Image (cartoon, rainbow, N blue to C red; front, side, top):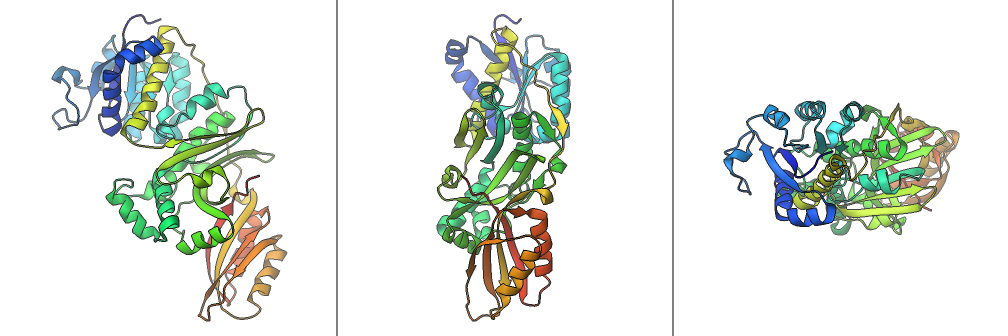
Length: 429
């Protein structure tokens, strides 16, 4: 049991790292009053101590290397905020092996190496906290690990990438193209110069592996997740979705079904009256369903210096409470599992085809769909006296593999110019 001050080392002094140091320094007395732990930032580790930053620290605060931190008996908690994969993993492993508590905001490390790191933390009987890895400042991990610990969770579904939500919001409200809004998001700093991780769904997939593990006590490999991004979303799809009573959002979905665990990231049509449909711009939200408590939604800013730093500080306090003996370390065990192949999942789907504007086209397509077990709930057919026009339909619940097979055949018809988009529909209740 640790008595007195709890020493903290920060690895990485970027946007979030500066926010963490600022909060711990300015609010030290308040944190002590509320939590009973006295936190002191002892060291920071950065690549270049001479770089100009938005915070002034004394030269002795900068550690020369990780070993200096690991050997310092006054440092109890190591906070990893450097990002990336291999180096971050190496530092976390070394800190855990040195029996230091670890706090990280690194969803990529957890997605790739989470099972290994949790086993190592359990072996060394030290805390490993990661609230800021999903949802920025939204408390998600703590409710799933503590508040809902007695609940059988059946699904987690959320908007957990602010960049894509901003893009889809602007496309919806202003009728602008994906490319145009992406450029704007990059100029505003909401999207990276290389936006691939965001717009192709990988960032959300990383976070989903964490949510699935917590919801279902099961680690799913990142490569096992079905992942689609938003590059194919057209303003035409957004308009048709609205006409049908839906909004389009990039959702991360984890569900427990009779076949097993579904884990997928993809654009989704959700009813306009669903709580997630009104989550706009850079905000995030996660919708949780359990057998005991029913439906919950957690909502807030998913990124930014102080929202994310707030979550990191919360984890630091939790780790400090464990070290001081005022909170019990609850080692979480996870089994390894696989997600249900997406072709075996069922659902309702929005399909937009570009077809010749002539009689009989809908009949040909409906015949092929019927042979593949696909029934249609609604159709929008617009004739524009052009070479090709949109034909949009929403299916009843169907097997995704059967739909794909039917669309493969349909794509070969001479009257079909393009299978332009296929988007899953979440009908709600």
